[in-house]
Image 1 (spheres, rainbow, N blue to C red):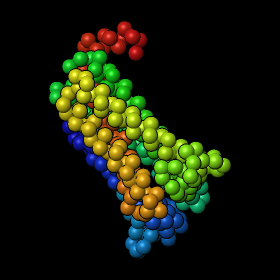
Image 2: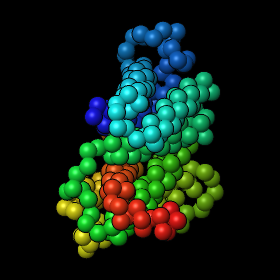
Image 3: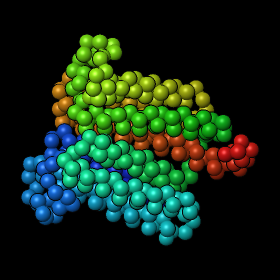
Image 4: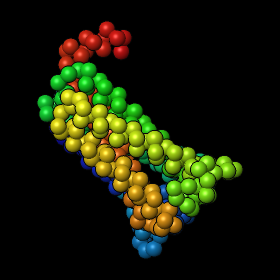
Length: 308
């Protein structure tokens, strides 16, 4: 159906937007347009220097609102669409509007730490919701359906927990970025020469927490992959999990490269993109596993008996 394709396009569009947002910050272009929603009082400023990145980010954000709005309208119009899909789509539209407002506030109030962090957090939240909608509206595929309901339930739980850890890690990463804590620990693998550094300010606390969560998140993602290969998880879902494992290893490498290059634009921006891709993959796997359970009559009875 068209709405399913539109949701998938929205996911890819959101990934591009997150990457652009990271480039904007890494190139110190966040205030290249000092006003909002216009840029130097116009919607068509001269696209040079930092204005190019900042205004391009705004244009892509506006395009995402239109794209997801189209997906929501199609979900309402096309026959057979489940009511909860449309309600979730409306929630996504509301989330996009709020996220856009926070984007404007970051400019109007000159990049306050918590407002900027909230802006990025909402973007990751929207990505997760858009991924859920893209997965839930995809055509059922037996090659993605675990044969045993117990395996499906476990996969939904484990991938969901790993996705939650990635989301939390991303929120802390946003705090590191917007409090200028990226170089608070300039050495590796220690932090200021210690296993546990003196936690004296928000920059060091957030950076150290980000590193600790990176270890926990990496272990969780690799643990899900290890479990999947010991369980009766369909081959295609295993391949998605292998992609998640590759992304989390790449993510750690980019984090290291970001410190070693003193926050160079390419590793820092790609670090954000890979985090978003990892979140999307894990949310997709968890959602697909959940959708396969809903299509099983016996699974529905099991969940009803459990009071879910």
